[in-house]
Amino acid sequence: DQQVKQNSPSLSVQEGRISILNCDYTNSMFDYFLWYKKYPAEGPTFLISISSIKDKNEDGRFTVFLNKSAKHLSLHIVPSQPGDSAVYFCAASAFGNDMRFGAGTRLTVKP
Amino acid sequence: DTAVSQTPKYLVTQMGNDKSIKCEQNLGHDTMYWYKQDSKKFLKIMFSYNNKELIINETVPNRFSPKSPDKAHLNLHINSLELGDSAVYFCASSQGGWGNANSLQHFGDGTRLSIL
Image 1 (cartoon, rainbow over the protein chains, first blue to last red):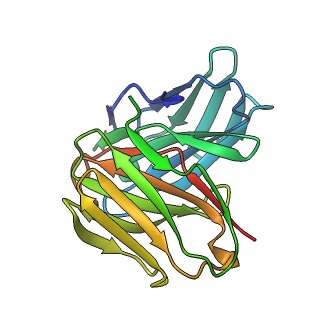
Image 2 (cartoon, each protein chain N blue to C red):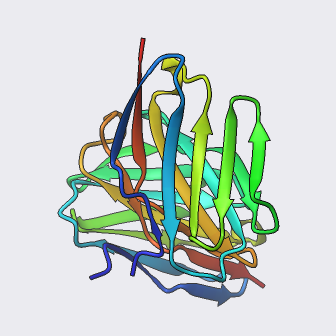
């Protein structure tokens, strides 16, 4: 069963606007969530994370929101830049174990 | 209906042993990958195969040898295991290769390798 889902395989946004990437999970034991960014021909690189004791974590243009009751997290990128065009993976783990990945969302930021 | 499955899920073994991790995907993808996660966040590509052909072989000790009997399988064999090999290893697959901007990757659940 897929415990972490990214239901939108692709997203297209205009430069300067907000990009919102969504992720849903089913396992209530997950206590740590991460977002990875992947460019073509490169491995995924860590972007931002959030612990389940928080509902928001911000790092520059990137903010991750966690809604535990809805088992939903989102990544906001404001303002979006063409260099943000990449595939974004959501991941979740429980007590430092058993990390699960979503299948990714391809973000395209148009100039 | 697991898309990418890895076995075993946990592997505890002694230094010096030889072990294998298997990976199978039923998505019909043409490319498969092995990643090593050696911290909570850092995920490093090790190998990639496209249609049974090795296309990526990063700087990995030659004790690690991938084997792809067909495009649905990519197994990882590790000889003479060392303490530093302890990590979680993730298999993934995609349609479209490593450099394809449109290819999304489906990850397995990981194999936690612990060397005693």
